[in-house]
Image (cartoon, rainbow, N blue to C red):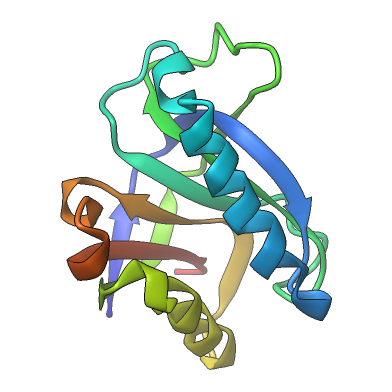
Length: 153
């Protein structure tokens, strides 16, 4: 776990509005992933920088106990062209707590990390938090995923 200062990033992808209440996110987010992969959304994102997938949590109603938007997409050079049915956002420049998890994605390593994050006394901004799925996450049974949690500096 370490603090990093990041520049802003533009992301285009598909979204779902969800909540951690009653386990809704445990159904909604995997369904979003399934749609992203089944419909080959990555290939439909214009001006993408590379094939790294970002799972962004934003538009928090309050904190992690209230509704928020999850966007699954890729970093792009510009938000001028957003395909129909997709959303473009800008992750703000700022200070982020970086948490790296590794193991089997199908065993819930990322979700378990979030359960831990929710318990930590972090001074969170609740503007944008995100996970990065790059080449290190290609092997689902031995993946490495970086989680970035927006915090006040």
